[in-house]
Image (cartoon, rainbow, N blue to C red; front, side, top):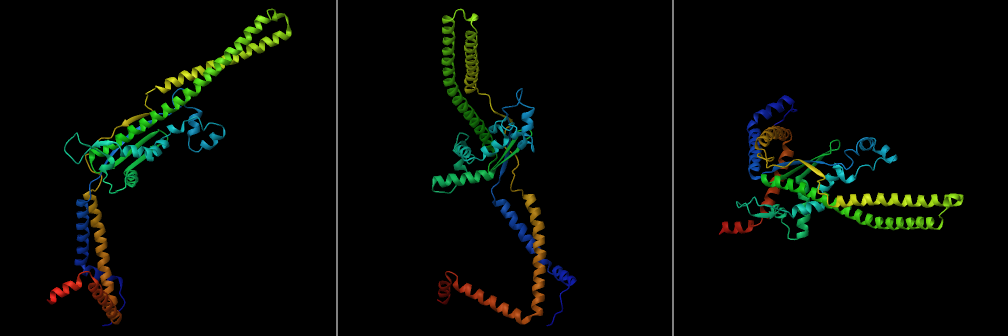
Length: 362
């Protein structure tokens, strides 16, 4: 049978004539999507947010320090020495990196949470056990859990308002909220540890400098006392006048240095025991009522559209294949013979084929 060229109207007509094929593919796609939606474990998303406290905000902040932090002017500000007015550890970008750091995620994985797999409220389990990491090696299991946790946590920051938003996905609603709140508390604890450590190191350094400055001040005061004892009529000698001014200036300089170091030392002692939180929690995470994924309605709608498109493509493909076979019968016969031969070879090589043949022969 000879066949002419396939026109577009003929292709559309052939595709419509194979509507059963298109409907079968579309319904199969919808059925597969529905099965996946019922089989896939649910995922709940909890959100927590906090605001970072800038060390230079308030009476000492603002002005040129805010100008230095503005986008596009940071490079120019750094040339004039304005880039270091803000503590980098108070930037929202620092908290974004901190929440993804291995140290904080390891602490989070080692934290106990109420076990959602049991009904007993007193039962708890570590997050590492709740993630169900199937690894015999503990180090490998921890590494896999950290990678998985990084995919389940998302951090967004706003540099203008220092606002940080943390979202956590988990299989259970309560667990997602608990993990988000625990992560924020670990950030606050890390800040306190860091601040106390820096304050302690600063206090130890200033304590040494205060003692040295006090000894220097006492030495200069003793020199001034000896000067006055040895030169009781120094006002009448120009050389002694100059010497007296030099000695008095040394005492004043040593006294100013001592007072400044003493003030910084007392400030460091206060900072060492200061419990004021560095971050301000705006919203604590609450257990979500609706799961984030899978959304059956959205998945079925997408499956219906995709299945319809796949069904139409399948029907059009079959029409094109049939038209080509009618136009090239010899080549089509060769292809059918080749496919039949390959199918027989695969069937013969299938495990247990010989045994089934012997059973049938017997």
